Length: 145
Image (cartoon, rainbow, N blue to C red; front, side):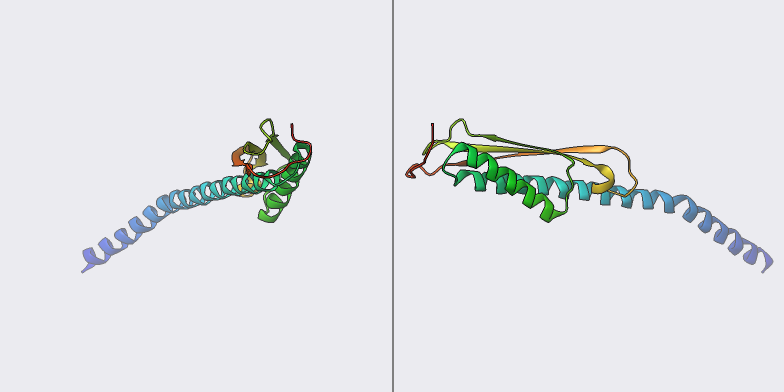
């Protein structure tokens, strides 16, 4: 009877020791999964901003308006998603801005890992996306080259 009680106490101690060792590892894995998921979500937000920008640019009547509307669409989309990009670049390719041509918008966002993943995490992440749309071949454009 005494051996049985002693064995049960030893097993309880072993289970607690295993929990102390395994719990931090499981917690780290969970935090890593959440962080990677949030980075993927932020990448999706940048891709969405590139799509919104090219949709706004393709309906404009000239390349200058296309660039301005693309920047406005990116700003609005990223603000709506809650993604902060202190270092953001929007490049609108309007070299083929003619009826039947195309417009391409590239959005590059450098954001803090603390904003995207877990608070307090140092470093930054560069997120980039490009979207292209064709201009209606039957539309009339002003100022097109």
